[in-house]
Length: 319
Image (cartoon, rainbow, N blue to C red; front, side):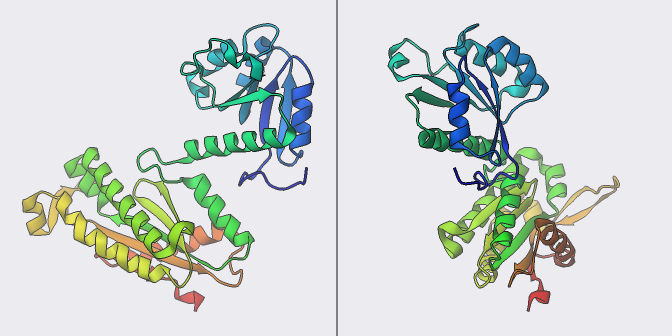
């Protein structure tokens, strides 16, 4: 197989293959290059559990034909450990055995591979399993938007392709004071509202290829073509300012501020929440690494936050 990065993974994926024979591990060697996948092959299940707990793989492949214990029993042993519940597991069995009475709703496997199995099919199914597991672990638990790993991967991928793009970092001003007064539940509602505004706006402007990620907390990222980002920023600011006052009680909304405690423990007045957006541009391969983009954006965000109202700031150094 040609040596190329598997999906967007930055390192070879470690796969533990538990099978009584050598055929399954040999098929992995045909389907994937060493630059993509490192395979650890073990013949017995019980000895593998200790190894797995010492050096967890990115994916566990379990053959139903293990000699020392049923494959699904081993899967249950692994998944019973809370720290390994998120470890993706692919289960391999003969297609003819599918007639057996197996409770697939109770079986904690993430992918089913049936023999006879070809190298192209193995590559496709395993790649999908790894990508699906990565998305699931990376997704922000509240908004379900892609998280840091996906954000970094998307940015770095565009940088390496020397693609022109605009990268926008958005976060909320005075969100902590809102949380302190109204509680985390209403704060989560604000974050969900912000995510919907950004996603709907960015997709309306940039189409299906536009990207939105949730760094965490009240920090969001979106990527658009250079000539589309300002229109998106204007629409996000306008929509946010129209909607966010309705999350405040009527008396606070009418006053235009709330009373809360600052980080030093002092009680003071805080304006209604605002959104600040810092936009940097990659033109003609100017950026070489994600870290550069992040550092530039952090500097620009400080400038945006000098304005107490919702606003966006474009990196003029790009012009």
